[in-house]
Length: 579
Ligand SMILES: [Zn+2]
Image (cartoon, rainbow, N blue to C red; front, side, top):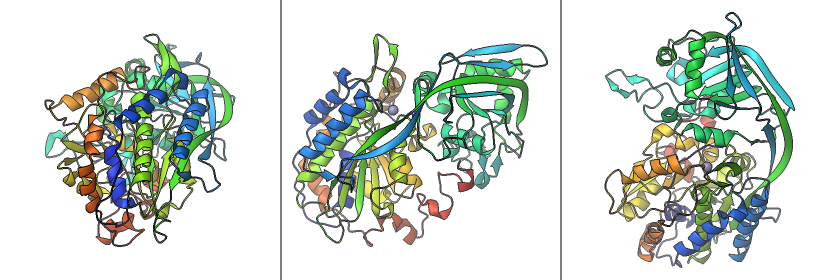
């Protein structure tokens, strides 16, 4: 699960042209394309999101169908197997752990004799990443505020408290620190103002709690700070939960990880004789200290465990230039979705049409365009459809940790997760703008199209950390997720964001994420028009130092934030904080 991501807003064509700039490797003059077909894309989306594909869960019939479908398309396009072993697949070993949904989480007051019982899925979700048939906790609870240890912001919510063997209760997102000069705004200098940093992400909360030796960590869900409603948390965290296979069988993680609803958290604090609102406020301060709740949390999870191999599907278009063909541009789009789950309005297949049949269809169409492009690209291009994005970005994590081609020779990673189906826009939004050296390329393309480049419209939702490009960025590969923007041609201001919110509320991670009759692929064909493409192709820049494009900003004296080798970056916390 990543749980989430920006929705509806990505256009296939924008990532295409960004990649072309890099992949062409300095070629100049017009590039001849054959058309990108919106109809073909829509047809592929319909196939991938059909009932037959059963929501494309990893290690299901849906995986077999989806990965075979993608492989077949790659073969038909004449693309080479992307794995040097001669296959179109990269196996991704994962462990799947299913907790018994009969689990109850009990908060008890040992002194007062009171207790409250939370109902699985309705009130809380919990899981373990440990490969053990049973895990249990029965431990003191400590409220650790936002659970952040961020030396660069001189922030430490743990304050050296001994939390070993205890259960952390933690708030989601970054501490919302007000601007000292204008309390109506958030302080840009502390946790980047309104934008979510990695410290705000749920993954981080669990990582740091485990590192401090906590037995458990429960995040208090709040819709606005999390960026999604409880239903998303519930759907994404119940049923089988996957991780990459690790040498220590998950034992470095806390025994129990989970979320609880806001309402139950308030009840919990009331039972502890504490005021949730007051403590939430107190947590927005460097002076905050962990608060012992004086209550115990007990939970036993019975787990069924299996190991599986899921698959990334990967194809390669070899670069035409012998000098440049060992340099790579990677396009990614995850093929997986949530599979079959709880029934909603009579449907239990989570079709994932936007998320992310659309991205896969875009990937296939981009691959097709590249095979027909003249002159052919000089650099090599990988088309990588990854697994288990919905399970925590696992397929892309596996590739980034076990790359098939050196990451240092990987100039760019362009991710597609949820394409725009709503029509052309006047702007272009880039998840990851300001985070990598690809900004210049993005701006050049946008300028050609007369479109405004905007950073992520909702940085508070932390989309940058919520899809597959982030795993590449963590390894130092310039990576981004170009998006279609929110300012739609012929629509009133605010319509784009409204439609996005409507999707989040009604369809996101629900069975109803299906092909809609009102979808238009106008945006795609418009952007892909021949004139626009040839105009872009004539603007292709030659990187001053081939193979080092991702390091340009360093030479220009700017910091390249996607460089973990520097020890810290804009968005990855200090290495010491990483679990
Ligand atoms: Zn998703």
